Length: 390
Image 1 (spheres, rainbow, N blue to C red):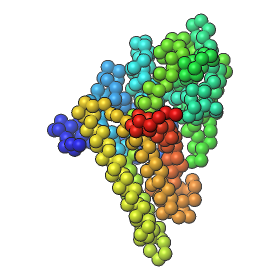
Image 2: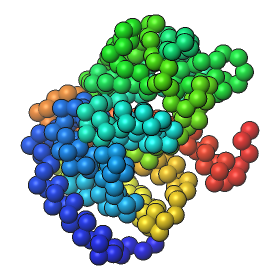
Image 3: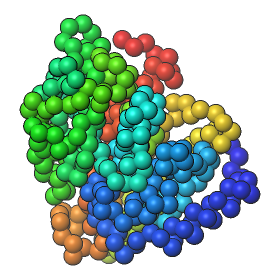
Image 4: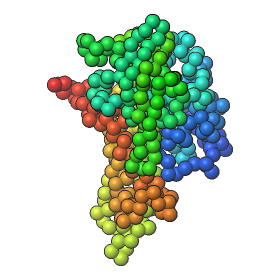
């Protein structure tokens, strides 16, 4: 592991830091909104600025509206945004369907969709999960029948994040019932304004409605809006989940640990503060060490990328470790707050405490999305440890 940076990277780091400091709309930042799909819509001031700068789709080539950053620059760019407390560009368009269209899309699909995504002019959502097809995604039943120059789609999707602000949805549909389940699935791009398509918000524990039910009732989809070949959508599905893990949220666990430390010093316990309790200090110190281990693993991964090597199975390991460490930190933060942690939706709490409560609610999802941790452990068992699949 080499933590030294070449002169050109040092210069680039300063460029990003200075530009973010001058342009990030801190006055509009909402410390309580952790999931944040709605704040990343077309009305986002920050994403609009990044789109005009060419820094929104920061992993994309310049010809399609991206930054053209090299892999080392991409890593530095994300690092500086996290340090500045600025939102890292994300969303189903930027991190998922865009990269997938580069890989599998037609020239016409690339011209139609990529520039609008890079400018934050069109927002996407994901139609994968169904009421009876979550982790077992291959059992999905939303059906699409090819009728000449169009498909006719019927069925339901659930947990459709950000559907309320989305212009388009990429959707897995069943186009063949016989044979192996994975070999009868296709990948469609569907306009959210299509007749017969409707959404219903799902009320969440944090009071928001970032998730939706999505219903398809005789929805007509042009046949040229299929990605790849008919019945070969499972290949796209797996590739897209890989992009999702690569574009997962970047969280500074060290900063979160420091916030918990501050909260613990502000809450009384047995004549002192929570921070005076030796057991609490030991647990917090353990999580801080876990955060350091996570950072050093990221350094090793970054060094490999800078040397032109492809990342290995570290992405699965990091996804599991980061999500579970994050949840443990939130739990410890709520423990430090004591009864105040039960003051749901009460913004009279200090902002850093209210944010921990609300972020904890959403943080439960981190071990589910991007491939549940149980699935990631299966991947590591098979591909890293060489254990049998059955």
